[in-house]
Length: 635
Ligand SMILES: Nc1ncnc2c1ncn2[C@@H]1O[C@H](COP(=O)(O)OP(=O)(O)OP(=O)(O)O)[C@@H](O)[C@H]1O
Ligand SMILES: [Mg+2]
Ligand SMILES: [Mg+2]
Image 1 (cartoon, rainbow, N blue to C red):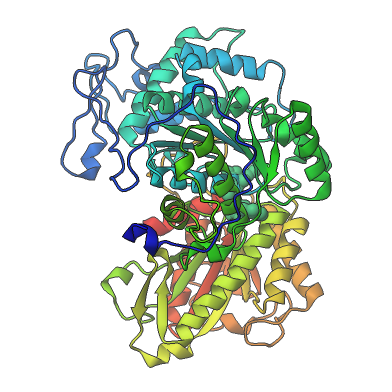
Image 2: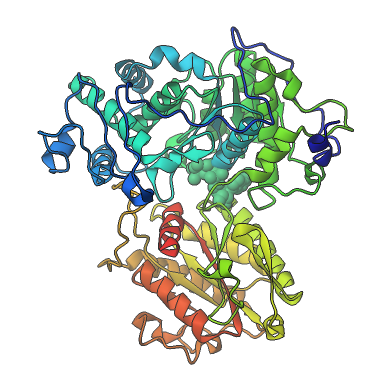
């Protein structure tokens, strides 16, 4: 066995749940040898329809020059806002990215979330958009892995992408939603698409569509546009495999324009988007199974019986094998950990292994699949992919210590750790609570041992200050969710599961998100600490929380009963509230904070003023909230 493979040798993976081998007609793929460096992303040359100037430093990279294809008009949006001068068509100033975001935002339809979409002919329309941008004939070349489900789609897609890239293939990954920047949705070979490439493909598609739209074929709504843009990018970038996450549902989802993927997967199913998909888990499963296609093997994870039945029914109608992928056995990781944290990721990783195995078999690369011989375990590409996969805002831990990497003694200026997870359904709230309980336990263990784990960078820093090991920890919840969600379904599982693991919140802060779903922001857009006029939703959340805490009569971190609402909470006495967030003055175990920047500032001040505390903040309830916190922490 080669040395590198020996180093990764693992005990057996179950001879992996692969269906009978169904060859994919006409499909074989070339790939880089496993040990060679990833294929560099090919850059456009000056003879291509466009070129870019590489200027000094990252900031100047935004000053991109494009030679737009001569048959194209200049983007109307850019002309109208003065970003691009009509007399100098080759120059797109840096703010053109903001112009692209404004153009994208204009595609967000006025339809309220929750109203049934107009489904008739939707996929036909999308097919027409693909024709207009010139990629409809190339779709079959993309060798797609198509993944739907209620929870774990993005994670499973991310594992698949990382595995196949580590096996030597050039990958394209399309996921949703994004946290900070729309480009996160389009990864090429593991990296978010660059701004220059994004702008090129964006305006190319935009102009072609604008030139062709009429009453019968209007501009597509946002997600449809992003879907056709993804196909444009992946076809143009000549990826070997495109991993496509379903947006919502399955049968009527924009991504279901894919006629013949190589393999399909359905992740954990649960009750979400019932207003569109149906009231029962069976109906939801049927809608999701709408991505199954004739001659294409399908895989899924452990499901409730009713959901499993609906998936099986659809599979048998199409006469395709539906294979059950069991959660990954951690022992097959040979001591490595999954790149995405939380026990639930074992479910997603097990599905990803099955999907990649099937993809490799069907595209003529069976030699790269896990060996049936249990002694040989997972191949090195699988192990590398599973252990290096990354996806922000899902069970992500960030230490708020900008100088951490300079190894400044820990604890001197406050100790604040953010645990971020975009859970927003009851099921995901449960897995989030389990992950948080175990993560804070782990962190506490490191502290007790005199070590602090820099979780974001997976390295250890020795703590030379023995007083550190005596630090007490406080857990704070920073929460928001969309108004269509029911906090009575989201907050109880969080509180119950944490409490059953001995984890109690000292305080809960309810705060409005800053990003809004009717606007697409760039990652660098200014985060304004605007105070929304109406905080009534946050007050509703607070009331739900307070009632829950009172009913449960929970104990706090010190083992003493939490003070009832309105009374002084001993954990928060002596803090310099007045200089920061007046609304926190009441010192109750919960508060509505009028803006997110204020909440972060208050947390930082509190940590600084209480150096003997470890402050562990769980941010959850909304991916918007998580994205906004990431933006603020990055600054
Ligand atoms: N297998 C799973 N079972 C239950 N919850 C999960 C599972 N995987 C992930 N989650 C939860 O769902 C959240 C989102 O994970 P992920 O992005 O992988 O799912 P998604 O299906 O793409 O979600 P979305 O509906 O937001 O697109 C995670 O932060 C976690 O809380
Ligand atoms: Mg969803
Ligand atoms: Mg997703």
